[in-house]
Amino acid sequence: MASIAVCPGSFDPVTLGHLDIITRGAKVFDKVIVAVLNNRSKQPLFTVEERVELLKEVTKELPNVEIDSFNGLLIDYVKEKDASAIIKGLRAVSDFEYEMQMASINRKLDEDVETFFMMTNNKYSYLSSSIVKEIAKYNAPVGDLVPQIVETALKGKYTELK
Ligand code: PNS
Image 1 (cartoon, rainbow, N blue to C red):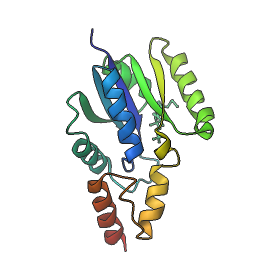
Image 2: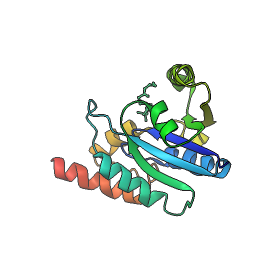
Image 3: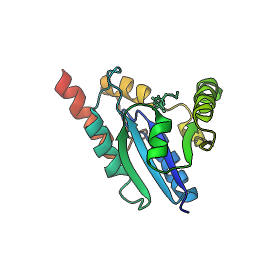
């Protein structure tokens, strides 16, 4: 049976840190489904459709990676996709408590689904979508933090919002 993992997140927008985790995860699992949370209560910069498009573009060289979006509980989506694993990136100790809480609740909801944590590459340990947006908002370069197409999309978004 093929091993299928779901890599969930907000991806608002996808960073080089995310891409590193997705690429490494795709070497371990037969298929990785990157699932963008469609969370109406949050105020994202990019729409779900835009985030999905950016992810599709930056993962187009990875044949076993699929991009999708989901609503509701992650564990329900994982089961719907016949996946057996959740992949998450861990940047620092500060991520640990929240991630442990999520992994524990997901295991309580379905003990057959395992969460796998991958240590983020050191060069991206400080990186988050929020930090990227904060910098890009003030027109500072983000070219070494996000793929080129995301940098262009960020510039477009902030020009549009001005
Ligand atoms: O990139 P993020 O915002 O840290 O991703 C968080 C995400 C999408 C993984 C998490 O919020 C999530 O799984 N949400 C779906 C709702 C859910 O299943 N909640 C219960 C487990 S915490």
